[in-house]
Length: 291
Ligand code: ZN
Image 1 (cartoon, rainbow, N blue to C red):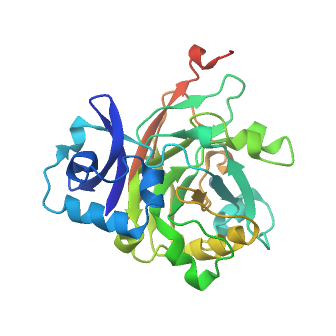
Image 2 (tube, protein in one colour):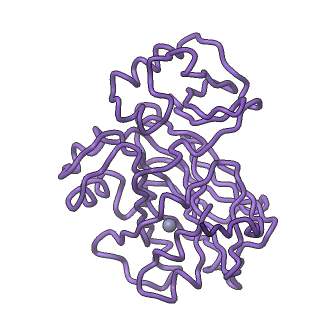
């Protein structure tokens, strides 16, 4: 099942994508929450009710709605650095002995077709195509062999990075968290639909040129190990997103580097999950907001 958040007639709510249409759950199952985190929090019974309501239901054409980030405001976005061996090599770094975890702020989220910003303060803008894990259940101290039980599904993430801001201090938080720098979607492909999350082809193109091509079997710390590791320290909650890391082929590692320019179009596709496509625009003047 593909769980999406969409806007139509100025109203944003959750739906289930079926082919090139979307079932409006607010109409077919009005008793269910209309917001994704609340729907996930409602548990497996609610998701089963959603699935049943969508079966044979009328759909809106996908071309008539706007898909949003499936989780509009994840409680947490956790990301992993240097989690593909070929990316470690191109970075000239050592292979981490433990997952190298950093946060992206929830305000960095934007939708699967929304533009993202060339910041006013930098031109060192880069892409990172990644598999995103979406947590479905509140959990803590989850052993690896039970991690699948707490995963709602998978999505596509662009871990947009501002390289000079990322690398000029020991922690990466600032350079990884500019507004709009977490394009995500186009939906949550539920775990049962995806099957083995460690056998998925993942590709990134810039203006149609293939830049990254990998398979999630190359992950150093896989999705289940990441859930185990993260939940050792803190509670994972429905709607939390884990961006599992990127492969080789990021712009800064190319010789010469090919960082993003205004107007560039970045497309990321993961087999069995979906694809997102986002264009770089100048950071608009109206982002300044004081009081
Ligand atoms: Zn990344």
